[in-house]
Structures are given as C-alpha cells and as structure tokens.
Length: 363
Image (cartoon, rainbow, N blue to C red; front, side, top):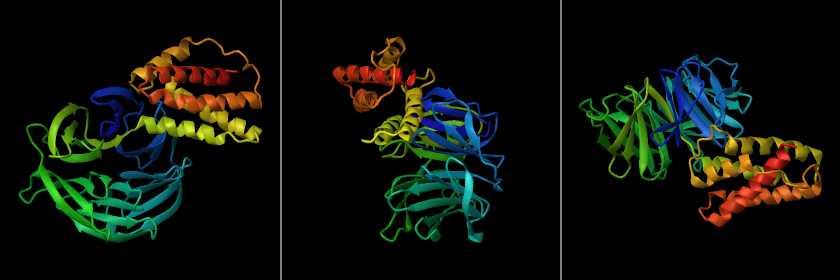
C-alpha cells in the first residue's frame, strides 16, 4: 500500500492500483509525505506541515510556523521530523510540530526532496541546484554531495546500495538514475534507465521503492508508474490527477504490530492507574485501525476478524476492571498478534482475543 499527494490537492491511500482512502485534504497542494507507525505528515503549498492518522480521513494537527518554499518533510523517529525549504532545514518535535532547531546553509538552495538512511544516520537531500547532498545526523553538517543534471524532485532508497532519483541524460531525455554510497559515505552514480514516453511522458516529481522488486514514480501528467527494479522497466501505469509530487510506501503490518507491542509494554507487573489510562488510549487507537469500516487492510484474516468483532457477544467477567482482567487482556493482545498468520487455527485465536479486547474497551 502507498500514499500519494498531488498538485490538485488529492491525498490518497492506494491498495496496488485501487483507491482505499480518499483523504479530506481541502484541495491544498500536497508537496511531500512521510509516515511512521500509525501516522503520516504532509508538507503543503501553504508552507505548513500537517499531522494525520492513517486510519482517519481528516487531519489531526497543523504547524503554526511558516516555512518559506516548504517542499519536503522527513520523519527521523516518533518524536522528531526534519523539514526542508529555502536554503534551510528545521527539526520539529512530534506531534506538537514545534521547531526545535534550524540549520541554515546558503549552498543548499531550495530543498526539493529528502531520504533517511536510518542505519547510517544520514539524510540524502535533493536540491534545486542539481545536487544530492549527504547530511550527517551526528554532526548535523553536510559532508559531501554529487552533481546531477537536473533538479532532484524525487529521491528514495532501499539501502545504501540502492538509491534512486529522477534525472536527465546528456541529450535532455528523462531518466531514472541509481546511486550507491561508498565506504566514505559519498554518493557514486551507478546506472540510469530511459523513461518510455509512450507510457509516461512527464517529468518525474516523486519516487518510492515499494519492495525489492518494485518502485513507483509520479509525474507531472498525473501518472503513477510501477517499475521493475531489476531491469528498470515500466510494468504498468495508473492515472491520477495533477502533478504527483509525493509518494510514500505504507506497511500496515508494521503499524499495527508496533501498536500491539506498545500495549504489551505498558502492562507492568505493578499495575498503576497511569498504565490504565495509557493502555486504554493505545488500545482504542489500535482497535479503531483494525475494526474501522474505512480500514484499508485487504486480507482474509483481517476481514474475518472484523466480521467476527461486529457480531461477537459480550465476554462474561469483564464488567469491572481489575488486575486479573488486565492480565487477561495482556494475554489476549499477545495472542492477537497471530492474526497475520495464514493458519486458520491461529486466525480463530486472534478473533477470540480481539473480542476480549473490544469488550474491555466498551465498558
């Protein structure tokens, strides 16, 4: 699954080539998207950052600060994001979206795209001055750059050995270029592939690697193209609207399992009321994701689970909250993580476990 944002204001969650959620984006130009766990951020033409929950159609929060020529947003971790605009970068805290630190660099020009390499603690920055910069998060300094042939509107990576961007060949034709980081964390150009104008003729504005075999691009004509990463050939295309400025891969299994792990970690041996409050908030969030009618997860196990939850009868013995109930719910959460297992037996266990969780939440 992936998110797309365009110049027409369309903000969409896709299941392959099918629209799953059409977000209420108020026709604002979507310049950039990044996500982690159960939320995502957007950078808008109005120079604002917006905070969204993946399972909700409306935004949760908007930044109060104004950032000139804001073009890119990048989530560093669950508490910090980095935004790129005119000759500057700013670290914002999450979810408050308040500025913590600003880095000004005259050489950066207008920042167009960014990509985090988590293990290397490096951010790749695509700029309007036709360069890709390497920013060290340890020193918070630019350590190197590579010269390209065009503005780097689109940039993504699978790892340090597979980095891709939109580019332009010496004869002016539109290409996809790949790079890698050498042992000194300097970018080296690897190879390029010509964009077939019979399939997509527009300049590439966004690029996202979905998995080891597939990457997608969005262009100025509103076309989302699916590429084979091995031979860099277009496999299929999907029409959308406006210039596709932003694409972002979404892994719901990570989002939901992370939420479940949070619930388990909240459970302590010495039960406290503060744990109950945090537990209830997290439980409500994760259960909403699973059982919402707008939930885009499309698998037999999750659909069976939703149907079961709607029709399930109350579980006896959970009319009042106690430590013993808390332990029962902890056990149910652990069992619930088996819903992604294709085994029918484990799926039934998952159904029963979610039923227990739901009955606690509606008390």
